[in-house]
Length: 532
Image (cartoon, rainbow, N blue to C red; front, side, top):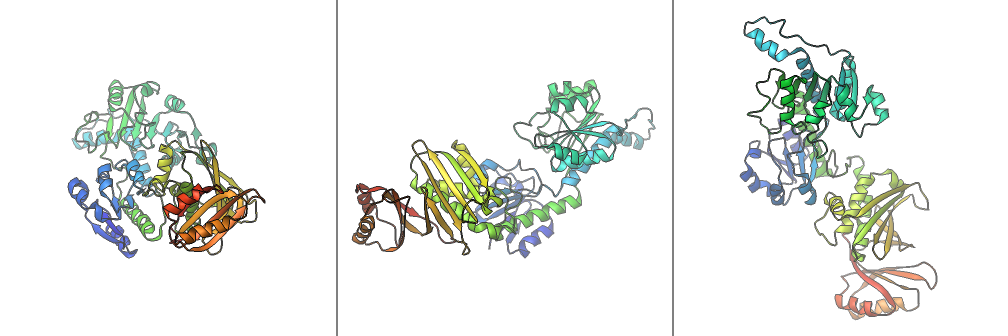
């Protein structure tokens, strides 16, 4: 039974979901703040469910010898070292939709609070003052709202702005024109947004490209009297630059829910009358807290029990529905990669993966990850579908994907081609009704070969005597041949042989075989056939 640690506060219902799904769970919500104790116990768990208090550092990841998945109840994963987790093959999941509405509504609330100076007016009135003339606000209707980042949350804010009769402009490199039209907004470049917006709201993740996106230069390009709202991430705004603009009046007001350093016990924003500050409340509604907790428990359970992957930030998602159909082809892709990885000695420069027919309609990102894992495993034993794409990228290997309609007798197949400095090698395979992977082409030679645990692969010129040579050599070394497959491109041309053995082919016999002038190359192969 898989075992999960919940190290931050989550809904009791989420804990019950783990139990109902057959996952052993330890609910220790104070452990996230105790780094030493967490480090001490993390090696006992297959899953770690967290919110924002637990910091999943590289040190913690290295100590997590059993860990397979980290589930973040919420959207932000900047408290998780994702590259370190990926290198260790640990899936990192978040819950990007559970608190989208809540966060969007908080941004809209901030906009109203700034437009009508509600917090200051409340304090003044409750102090017995009646300062109607002091709190002169502005209307939101007909104003221009600039949305930076138009994903899940940003798009909700945009539609709310449209509903308030605002003109909404948005900057997002991934926003298509069709999607902008669907939302009823205008897609613009960032400098145009700065120049036109009366209100600017941030809804983008914190990356190297977005860090300090609001700085002195950006503020200088904005309209006088602009109001800025950040309910996304601290670090998007250079706080000192914004404070300076607030003091001069260039920026009329700011709504700040997130800070560079949290918890924010002190801040340059504190004490400014034209700033509304809240303590990272974007996702703080009872509905959102319940939603993200239930979602992360369901996602983690589905992965640990069924192998389904949802909302992973470092691996392609695999739904519970598609997992049974996809699983044989994941194994096929892994086997194809493992074959090429075991027979290729030179450094690989390029990898091309072709999906033909039915395979082109599948979750090819998952299949690519499996193929790369198989390809790299002969050199890096503990690689998996999470870490393999990272390793390929770090090694500078060029990866390309090709999809095409059915082009042959098979309903669908996968072909893997690798290029080194001196050669190009390809192999293709498919799965039949028994769901077992089969090789259908090697070196351009067609064949129909199953996958065996211990195999010997040879290449040679098509000539008499090769089978006798291989049989004699195996017999002399006490190795039994369970089966074999032969193939050639033409009579007298290139030929290959695949021998299925009951035990690994001995090193001494391999050296003898390679020394024979009739054999061009010989490789021992080993495959994990437990699920094949």
